[in-house]
Length: 162
Image (cartoon, rainbow, N blue to C red; front, side, top):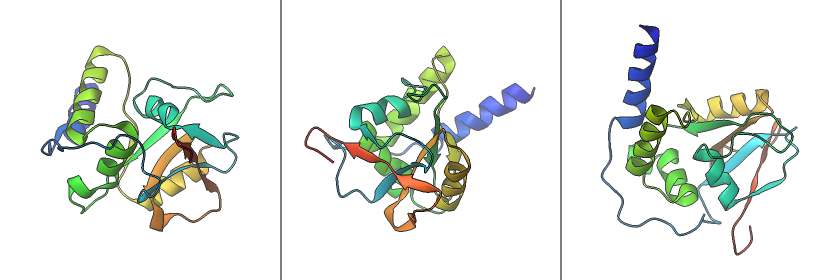
C-alpha cells in the first residue's frame, strides 16, 4: 500500500499541473541564465559539458567519474507560476525540453523501469543544504540565491565555450 501511495504522490508532482507546451525551446544553455548549477565543494569535477548535464538530468548517466552515484536535485519552487519556475527555465535551457515534455519523459521512464526522476525540493535553501551535505549531489538554484561556501558553481561548457 505504501508503494501505491508513493507512486501516486510521485505522479501528482510530475503531472499536475500540466502547463501548455512552450512554442520555442532554447538551442543551447544560455550563458546569462537566471540559474546556476551547483555541486558540493568537495566534488572534484570542475566542469561539465551541456551534453553531460543533460545525460545526468535525464537519468542516462548515473555515476560520477569517481564511481559514486549522482544525486540530482530539482527545484520546484513554492508559490511561483510553474511556467516561470526554476524547473521550467532549467528544462528549456539545459535539457531542451518544455516542462510538459520533461514530465512525460519521466512518467515513461518510471513505468518502463528505466529510471527515477531527481529528488525534489521546494526552496533554494533546501537545495543548498542538501548539496552542501552530499558530495554526490548536483542541483540548480536561482543565481541570486547562490553564495559560495560548502557548495560551488559548476561550469557548464557549451559548443561555444562557458
